[in-house]
Image (cartoon, rainbow, N blue to C red; front, side):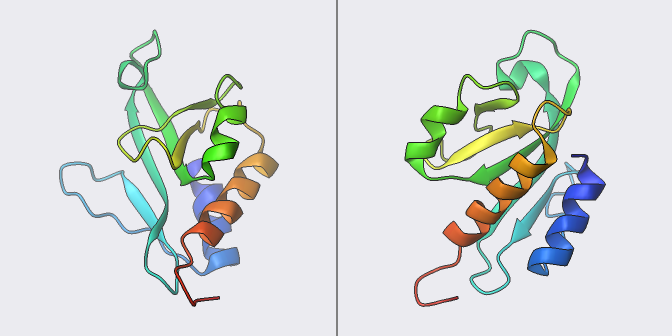
Length: 122
């Protein structure tokens, strides 16, 4: 899934618009839960070396919140990495290079959106 498809999916299914919060990183964006306003996704492009990859080319990534028990099963699977620049016990990084199917990405976005709902919100 590429960035545009991902953002279109978030808009259509969650009513989320990307927020570009950092002037220094104009391509980085976050997606917030419409009720709680908590982040449920972040899209960035970072050098592979910052992700622990051997190549230094810029990689587009998606960070999503995830149940800790699910993280272990994702690590070691192609396209999934320990999270870049977030809480490592609750988030995972997904490479947006085609190595993870659109269905898996959509499912993880749904999980992340649900996890960021907030107490007492539906």
